[in-house]
Length: 209
Image (cartoon, rainbow, N blue to C red; front, side, top):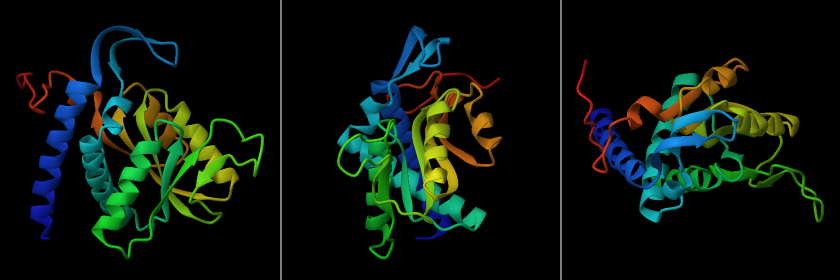
């Protein structure tokens, strides 16, 4: 597929995914976030990432973004994952999309536990991860970036190398800067600004200034 065709397809898929997010995941009101902050916007992204049709879009869009970012940064990608459970469905969807793109893409998925497993192999990282792997860390929503940073630290302590970070929604509340201050590029699929005034068709009803 030609680059221009790829870009058109990507924008079409992103628009459809944005519409699903608006319909299933975005809530307006007064909410206390996990960070303790009060917000007028809540994004229950798991309602979207666990939806089969939306998962196909998350995978397709996410994998295309990963390919573009890895080419730009000159890094390889061995595996995709992040902190459970916000990253889990995203990571698997993107790894499946990589395989469908080409079965020569040996990209796998993994999950970082919040705490070390206390029985069996006592793992902190489950799934397809090995020391030395170059990985893309994913998360569904970042506010302060704490859960993403926790995953990054676990991966680095396990001798993995973080290529970059992809997030479904950046709430634009400092999380991206906190992660990038650690030296890791963050690529958001959507930002808070994208979610404001968007209906289920993915179209914005906010007039341009």
